[in-house]
Length: 341
Image 1 (spheres, rainbow, N blue to C red):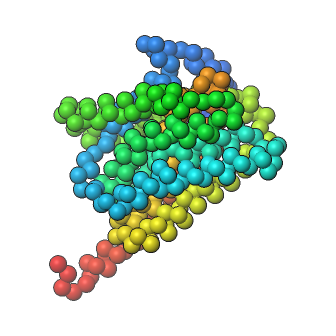
Image 2: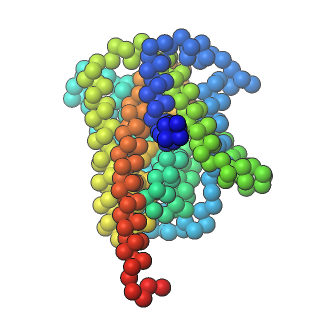
């Protein structure tokens, strides 16, 4: 039972995504019934997203040892400026084949323009013996600045379907992500009991955050069940191929940049991993910030984001384990050297 529980906890998000997508497609009525429910004037997806980012802020640790300026600058450039460029060729694919599902491709393009992952990346950096403080700082900075860059890039992603004001989206994203993130960070900074609670319950906070992601994905999939059901197999396979291909390209770019920059091993691992990952919670918040006419298709938009997120989790988990073994081997070899300090 212990091994099964450990497996479920370790793979909670992937298993949960498979479950809620299947349930939402087979039985959309419960999700549809919850879509219109409001709490204190906020829709349930808005409440869930607020919880996600309050928890993210509450869980952010000190990054006083993370000021590795070269690695930080390269990471910010890759996450906010370079990797979003992959959205451009994806959006041009319908010009090559008009039969392609534009909404699915827009969802894949959206995944390209969001910043780096909020929690799983830091977890993998820890496992791979990278610079955890740098990973936390890179996550914090890119997610804060990403609120401003995404409002313009995401509006371009959906501009072919309907006019999307980047300024209105910016206001929505500040309300949905930046404000609750800052609230969580302030609670950690100024409320000592909460800070200690967050330190003791990292895993539980992560599970609560992932549960909120699953809830929002369920509502989105349920709402778009009819459109998803008629999507062709070729479109789904294309999204799967793009998800793996985009992650591979990000990985190659990060590898080349980190190697050319001659970063130390810990920073090298951090840059390669963090700059190849994108944030599913931020994708969810962007879709919730869209105008109502586009929001009703959010289930179609989120499907390729889920595929891409699953692909990066699976691929990077295997690489993190490999790098962990290499780091442990190097440490063991160092320990056997004569005259070591």
